[in-house]
Length: 346
Image (tube, rainbow, N blue to C red):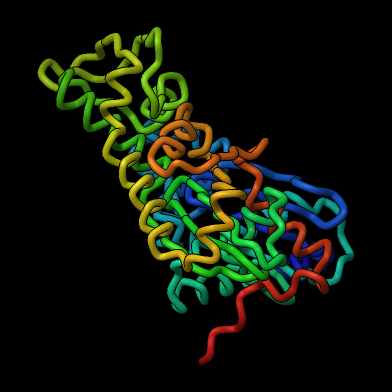
């Protein structure tokens, strides 16, 4: 049985995909979230074959022999390596469908709101290559708002701040559409990068990407704490080239990530400035809804509330908002079809 043939049979159930810079999540109609894996692919450059995808491939980052490269096909929420992205999507979709004999599904894919027509077409192309019958696109802040349970169809303004791995989306939504939006290429990856740079400068220590992410998760705070926790981090000494451990405090991490955190808050304030007065009035009541992995950065809600004077609500499971919202579009396609992006004019 050929690869293409099996793909055609595999796909029948409509599905939604949150194709994220850091993680890809897949939602299947009537089944909910069936997959949540890192958006990483390990490729053998000698044979051009894919060695591993997702969790397995992420374990390989920074640990591969020369001929195996771990590729992240998305950067800043945008497909940077189309071929690898297609293969990754196809792999995840095949993994989800174990049963055969399906007709092709409809696929809803969430992408950042600032995407160009070219970038949108790349995403659609990847979806069709993976075997979808029809690919629809939804903008991430819209998906996040639906997933967070906001009343997107009412004539009331709601603000969503969705902080992902590669982008931060700030949008004001009303009547099933986006009124104003800012898409910033700052997200969790930038926070990790800032930690790497800081530790390099202050401690002459080189950290790997995965270590930096772990430091952020363990010690990342956007608001001063009473007793600042500390942790030991391991990396390579820049001078001696040998492994070394240093102790770093939450205060240092906060200093390290100050710039990207400030950029996010700045984007929220700009979006508020651009908001029509009627809607701005609504927002004082409805507040700002925080979603995406970045919403897990402790103290960010306090920081945002402090900067804007608005009530801040962090959703229960911020990592799943976008995929759940996209999934709702699949479940209630006829009711929610209006929030999907129109086809770009050729």
